[in-house]
Length: 209
Image (cartoon, rainbow, N blue to C red):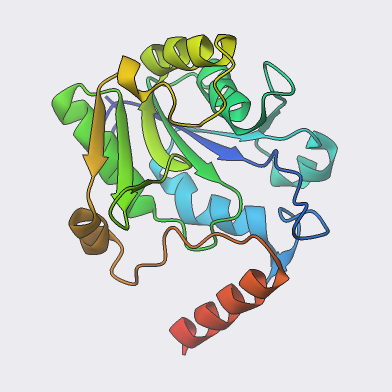
């Protein structure tokens, strides 16, 4: 247990390996109200963790972050490869994984996910919203159990981020719980293009008034 959270130690892994094809430029470095987007994500979440890693195929551009930078353990496998890398490179028992394009990412949801894994012994604590939609890049995982299951999925050429869930114990964080932890309902707002980026900045400016 760690006094910082009164929970099992947590590693935070920020996934920054996407190609940003719809954006036309690297999302991670775009200045969100003057701050690189990935730095904003880091600042909103690092308080929950004893270790922070960034998974990136261009680590040189992120050296300013002053955290551990890692490349994919198994290159060329897309998002599920990044998830495996998180389990492979993290050192804590619990691993909170977030995407770099979530400007309103919720530390409260991640912290509650870790608490629930401690409480229940489950392997994954994942938000499930809009009826049937999982948020695997805003979730918490038990490292060794999930690493084994994800590797088996990759070896079977399964690319979906949740294709291995049948092999582990999954705890769903329902919409009601997520709303309690994230009253603004913005935690899962992700940036795919410049219109999304501008909208997110506008939302933040309105919130700050």
